[in-house]
Length: 110
Image (tube, rainbow, N blue to C red):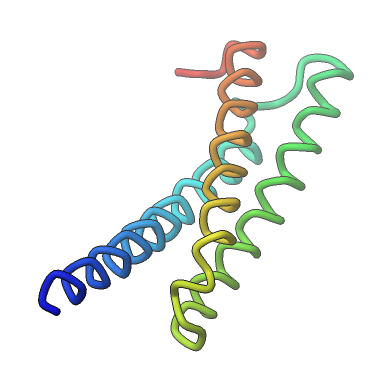
């Protein structure tokens, strides 16, 4: 019986860990949005202008989704949110990679 309680605790710890990563990513998302609005990150051509628009839109959607997850985690059993949390973290990684590529394209990574 003790081993079963320990494994249940591990599962909750895992979901809590994922939720903590979402909370950390939330602050990074806001930093990326701030950087995208900065003059140092202005687009240099039409392709970059379109990319900035897509990134801003993606980060705003992600920020809203993460905020909903954080608020719902207090109301709903955390185990039910694990799939949504994982999807949110994967979306963050995709947007982060796109942001890095954009910064390298525009040479505004300093």
